[in-house]
Structure formats: structure tokens, C-alpha cells
Image (cartoon, rainbow, N blue to C red):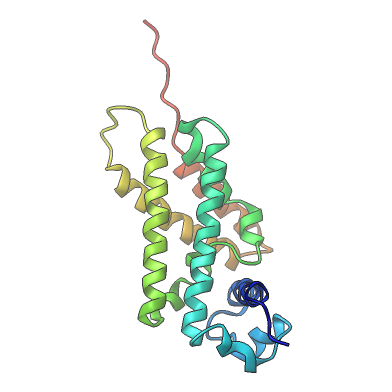
Length: 201
């Protein structure tokens, strides 16, 4: 029986979601198509009905992870005062929960592999980085006091994003040791923007 368009779309989405988890767990190179399809409860023979190549799947899975991350950071940032959005994003990203997520940030999980990937995958990854950078830049602009003589919001956001990615990577590497949570807490403290001190007349 021929599958409906809805069933085909659902199957494709399932492969993407399973691949996000498998790439986080085993890396891109360590995740073969047979294993990926088996994890999705499918046979390898059906793969090419949904994707042109493994690189196509990696690009789609990376985009899905980026979109998910952006939605989470935007949501947590919108749940309080505008000036608190950046700190909320930092706290969410550098949390034990994010460290332990089965997928999470694709840059921290797959950064070196994405750098070696084919151009379509790199393009998706770079665009995702730029989108995340733009969100953090906007949040920083609302958080920093007026007249702040420090670096530009984009420069500060770029430094912060790179620190976030590095800290999460180390925290995952040291998982099970005290260093893991120490890294998360230390970088969280350093990145969060302090509210301006009120001055008395």
C-alpha cells in the first residue's frame, strides 16, 4: 500500500529526530546509515526515499537541532524581563539538563565534525551559528547598561557563544567528575551580565 504524504513526512521527521540523538551519541562518522535506520525502526533500503545522501540527512538534523535550540533560548528569554533574557539563555545553555540532553546544541556536540563536513552541511551549521549569535546579540543589547564602554554587543555575544560551546563540551567530557558542574557554574558566573548598580541622589 502506498504511504500517504503525511505518513511519509512523519517517517522523514522520525529519521531526523533519531539521527540527532545518534549523532550526539556516536558522532557523525560513527553513525552509519544502517544503524541510523535501525534506530528509527526502518531498513536502510528506505533511506533514499527521504534523503539524497547522508550529508543531506546531517544538514537536516543539524538544522533541526539549531531550530530547537533557538526556540528554547527565545522562549526562556521571553519568560521574564527583557533585560534578563541573556542571563536566562546563559543559565539554560550551561545547565546540567542541557549537558545531559540526548541531542542539544549541535555546535558543542559536533563542532569538529561539522568543520570537516561537506559544504551543504557547513552552510547549515554556519547559518545556525549566525542565527544564534544574532539572538544573543539582541538579548545582550537589552541587558547591558546604556553607555557601556565595553566591546560591541556582537563582539561580546560572539565571545559568549564560543565560551558557551567550549564550556558545554568540557562539561560533557568531564561528566561524572566534580569538574563538570564546576565548569558550568564558573562560566555561567563569568558570562552573566550584572544589573547596573542604582545610584543615590
